[in-house]
Image 1 (cartoon, helix red, strand yellow):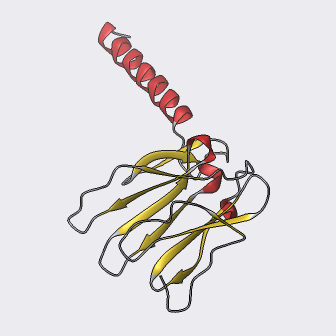
Image 2 (tube, rainbow, N blue to C red):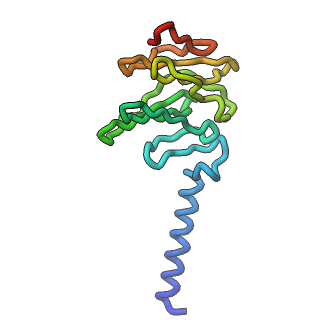
Image 3 (cartoon, rainbow, N blue to C red):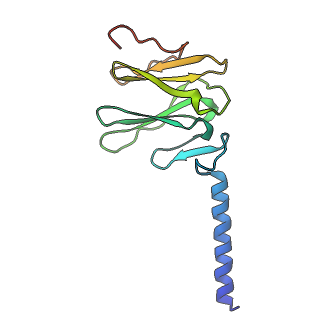
Length: 152
């Protein structure tokens, strides 16, 4: 073989090695184990693959994503109608360490505002609701979330 062919093969092997290392660090959701870290191609961020992610689409065109990230906390980020993204926000809480997608969920809405629920480290359900002004309640409510008559 000529030295040019050998250099080309050497370069290709090195590139494959780098690609393999990259895939091992950030596997695709399809091939990832539940304890691996995943990322969304549009929203970015990192979270435990096993919990997957949840989206909520508002009537005004805003889309919000929810994940279980570092410290088993719930994190959220949203895409505004003008296409820009918010920063990631830690919503607190601590989801049990089962890596099950069913431990992070939307179960219903209250006056067209989402309610997110998680299973806490004690195995109990906790909920957090969004207010009409766009803010989220500061605390997680034990045993799901109460929607008052007439909404929020």
